[in-house]
Image 1 (tube, rainbow, N blue to C red):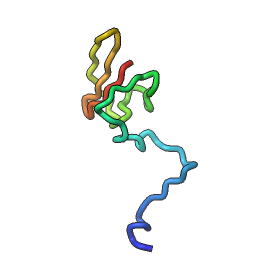
Image 2: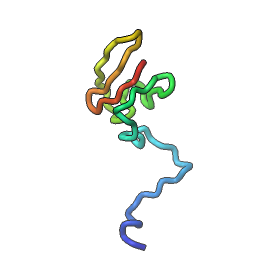
Image 3: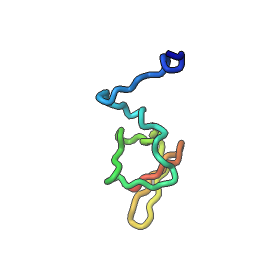
Image 4: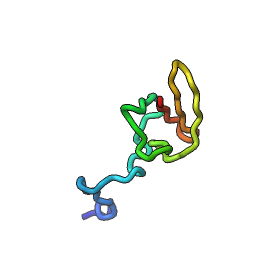
Length: 75
């Protein structure tokens, strides 16, 4: 076996994923709906784990934007 294959971590399908496994997997160009995509960790960004958000209100909706990565979610 090559050294590259021996150094790779094998992820088992039955092993539960941690919230950190999802970081960087969400598009920042799309506005997610909270009812369809609730928070993985309450009060934290699903994309980077940051807890600082910029909030804006428009069209009777609350838009939450992460200050670090820019992921947007209607709440």
